[in-house]
Length: 187
Length: 262
Image (tube, rainbow over all chains, first blue to last red; front, side):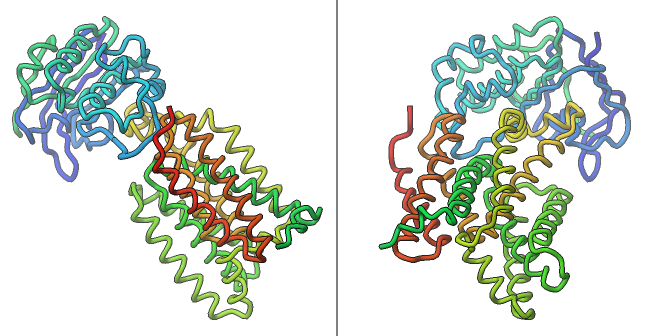
């Protein structure tokens, strides 16, 4: 089943910064988008979520498919009385299935988590949600090697009904996690 | 010291109106702070004050003009789609300037302007109380629906657009509750006390509480305690209620130095 299809897409903001991009994401796949900084990897995700403008081509999301998006720079208030467990409830992610490194952190408010713990928690909030299509933008940023391993474990457990797109400039991470990698070349 | 007035049946309406506002404004303030839009309260109170003063020129009811001005400001804010506090700062200074200019050029403007600045809680009316109770009931009853949506929008800001779901229903409900309550509060306790009730208790709660549920209980508790203490002090020493409320709320700030709850 095709969950996401990009057909000769040119996307950007004031002007197109990436394209033509054509790809399909099938259920059960973890597709990596690799490339140097500024090549438009995040803009491709933006074309799917609607935050970037599609100048030409078509973006087709399977009918009824739910999307979860983890931003490259996630929202993080400096002070917020919201426990990790409460954040997971927002996306209906099961706290009992979250990475072991986070299990004893779920009772803490988000502002008491380290940058890496927060990054992993938000990624799990997306991957643990019932979304059919998960878009992860540089999810390994700020993560120590153990947490990168935990992220890889989460991605390896991708169910057969879900598609995942992972943007990263870390080739080794993509190679370890993805079933397919697409190199995004400059326009 | 004279606290007899506090037990006078005529004083029940002002007492209950202020207490209702002291509970519901901090709840709305918790969400405003979470959205990083806490300055919005000050912007809307000043725009509402300008609208109230415009009523003298338009010959329309004060409350309608205040609500209308705040609603127009909210629609403009929504149309610009700029997050953060910049536009609220612009609203505050624009509302302040327009209110003072209108006050200086109308017969009763000076009196009305002073009233909106200081509030007139002791002269509160039953319709004001019913409106405030309506807003409070709607806010508390709608929390279970509103809270997850506003939190999702804060932490996963692309969610609604990516899933082709409208965000405007919960945005509109929150704006109506916030603006409606603020306009009533501005007419009852004054612009600055209304802002203080929406700003200070959540500020304290964010420093003291560890969970969202705790914050939604602790902030209105702070508001209610500060309000009752302020009112008792204002009556005992024959002082205006608005500034007394602000002083009592500020006295809560050292609570932020306490260790966070478990």
